[in-house]
Image (cartoon, rainbow over all chains, first blue to last red; front, side, top):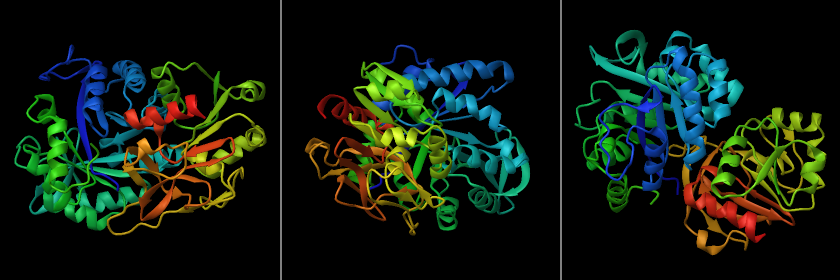
Length: 251
Length: 194
């Protein structure tokens, strides 16, 4: 049976994981390679590494980091942050990344999705969408959620699928950081609309939230960051809880 | 020595890193002599069938692979290309396994691509029974139906071939190089047991 995926997300700045990671039994919590390998060992199903600085200067650091991750991590991982062309993606894939996530650049230039899918296959292309409800409309935002656009979540997700995205990573900005649970209604609607997998992101606070994302929200995967990084919820605990609650999970 | 066939496949680097983690020495090569004289050959694969077959044909690697006598392991698209033909852009393939490669038809709760961790049911000895219900990582939109060569079955929309074997040719639809300890175990079986 195909299982639901649990995905820790790591923010990377200058080749290091961003502040505030408080992790038991790890030598250097700032080292993305060690942290990633630890999560893999604990049973994470995939990892996401986001280069949050993503300037040209930092690009080379990030590419060599991706290579080190690929060397040490034995599960699939996605990399993202500042990707705006096929040329940006080539060194990342060559370094061993399994997928890339694109966000602002795809909104600016939707053709980018087609180009990446054609060059590397749909399975490489994760379309990340940050959205917030404005006047009852789920409105897509770019630049780390700081800029509203004229795109709406559901039409944009559909367009992304049609252009060749292999997965949608949907972050509800209204839920992100609240620890009140994932945005269930839009997740369920995305599931209805799309034939590609959907990753839920934003709002995870308790184990129950993951159950809701998978059952009510019909998500294929769920992503969280601080919850795992701060040791508030461990991946083995979460996964055995989900399994005991009848969710298909890899243990 | 293990030879990994060098061509335009997306996962060569990951396969190589996994061999390093297993302390196995390898070469990544498209040199026919190096491939022919290797103890074992790994034929990785991520990409589109037609483009990839054309790439192999241009370099006559398709003919070379067909004639190999040592154990050969096809991974993902590598497994599909060892079949007779693929529905992906109607591509004639290498033809070790006289079986077709078909496209998954999405169902309401079963999306395409089949992406993520799914369980194995071994049916033939090289995929030993300790692998029963072990999870491995899949990413694919095309599949090989269950057939006489099937060595492990996975279910998605229907049962399909997760692994196959014919003589010295072994093949897996999933990515052992991305399947944590279970994947490393399967690669070790190929490297040490067959």
